[in-house]
Image (cartoon, rainbow, N blue to C red; front, side, top):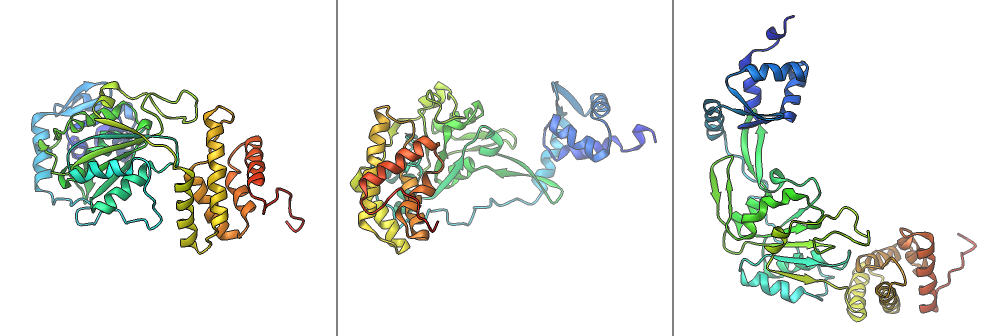
Length: 368
């Protein structure tokens, strides 16, 4: 069968209209799969269509007439309500949470409802994200959390067209949702982002965003704010501990009004955290919690002095308490939770705890 007889130009244009004004190479691949033709043959045909204008390598724009038809169709299509439109997105209060570090400052910023972009940096597992969530929970503030990766782009953050029941409709991204609701936008692990995160520049200035694909300007509602968390300060990880983190654009970082450096809690505070978790699990052992807090404090001090390359986070101590709730065995709980480290580090951690806690032994039980 001749190539032209497989499908008409109208069939092809109708297929492309679902993607909006701009057609890229991924859309061409989808069309080639749908109509069962080679991509090279399809692109040759596309280049001959007056309704498509090639604007770059692997990129075409619909002509003004075709684009108008797209937007008219979108205007007539039923609106798609955002998934979180009527949902309560105020975080739940954590009964085990113990405020420490920068919590009171973060809470004060959010309670003011001023637009004041804030960057929180610190080692993994020290409560950066949790402090923001619990500040919002205590204040009754709505929170939209976005986990950033190297693949996060404008479509993920701002929004884009989605195919719904054969029609293309605009769907707000989390950033636009937060803008319109006056919610707190939490960019979690922001130092994993690529330069595609720069689509947030105007938003970080408090000016809102122009949605060019639908010709709409969204202004920030009262209370909107942005908080970013990261393991680094956006300059990459020199020691290699946080592989995948990137050097962020200086102009992007400069738009954050202030930076908090989050440290691990003091041994006394960490003991309170562990006791609350243990009590909630029905395995409260105050002596064990105190030993764990002292154990982690010694390890962190040694880490700061360059004596070791690993550290025990508050999150990992909570894992130990949960393991203790399962096995009711202190040393077993510690062992299963430090197995993630290399053999030398793991053994040194276990031996250190053995010196702190007289009630445990590192010797293997014969029954095991």
